[in-house]
Length: 224
Image 1 (spheres, rainbow, N blue to C red):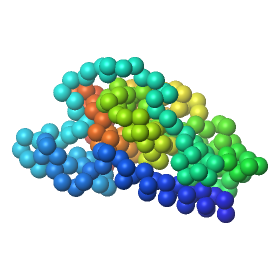
Image 2: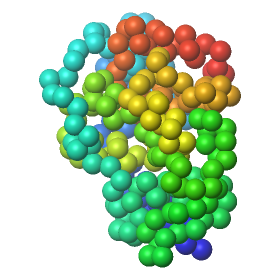
Image 3: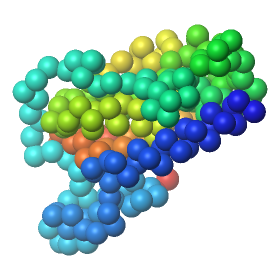
Image 4: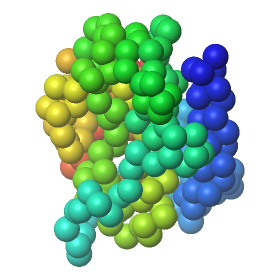
């Protein structure tokens, strides 16, 4: 029952946060003559001069004026006030079996999770991290440095960008983008790349020309 209420509370939180995003696609064309598909996250052109790379491509790769500081990206918030922070909400939502909570009901201790990065099953929450699919530091380097503290908080706690995974693999990934790191579970590669494409479009984060070219080649063997 507790798990059910945790899931419902997080869904309600998600519905509150999503409209607050300043980068959500409105359905019309952007200044380049294209738009992002709501379901696939892919960018489509409707004018001859439009580049299918859309928001993935930056004219040049420029370093942000400020250094990345994790404290500038508040995460693991308890936005719905139920005493469970974002990490434990995601452990509850993404569990594939019954959960065991702490005595105060504010954290998840045990359960069952299928880690998409490795394909392995886990039962101890302490063996798992909640990964930012698009890392915070990577986002800072690719456009996020210009965001307000509020926008950074939304991004850092967006369920669409959070995934329960093996803690060692999360640490191995670090702040690397898809050009430099992919999960060892090759069956998950296309899903992982599609998540990156959807999030880059949603938040208008930009890859350099080189990064975008490599990213497109990585997606060539994936379903359209």
